[in-house]
Length: 243
Image 1 (cartoon, rainbow, N blue to C red):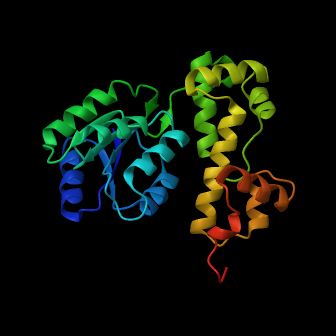
Image 2: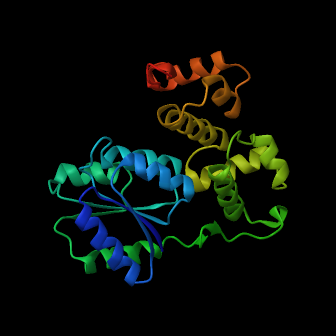
């Protein structure tokens, strides 16, 4: 499995990374949400091993955001929060498995093995799909579209463009996608590009006009209005004063 560990305790993170690597997994370790976002730009893992008590954005918020952007990912929470309401919140925010500290490495390994049985659509860093998009079965097509969307840099394709590429009607593609991911292609694109915009505004100095164009908006004011409607505040508030 390709795994990212989010743990702010340096020694614990390093031991866990090394132990899982010795078991044959490909493992990256980070200490906070910002570092995780940078790693996700390099590649989405099969499994996210996530602490909850983190500096800045906490694990519950991270799980909610990552689950929305990458519905196929496996999430294992490993935390000192042991109360029932904490467990319930963890599962509601997207956890597949909730483990409490102190946690034996053997238990983590078994949890990863159990979760890996569900993750059957991945091979290395890419989905196993037929070479001809028009020959894909419905579930494979939906997963291939999802993988294309999360790997696209810059402007995302439209539903009509995707349907043409994958050899089916927009209605059929929407229906197939909704079966796999619980929402239409348009809804996924809308949520995903807003999340990308939010991250870019916080972490880069790309001009807002350029960012709006990259996300498919014909005018920056349209982007600003849509962003404010979704988040309740203007995108400009995420910029530092000198930007």
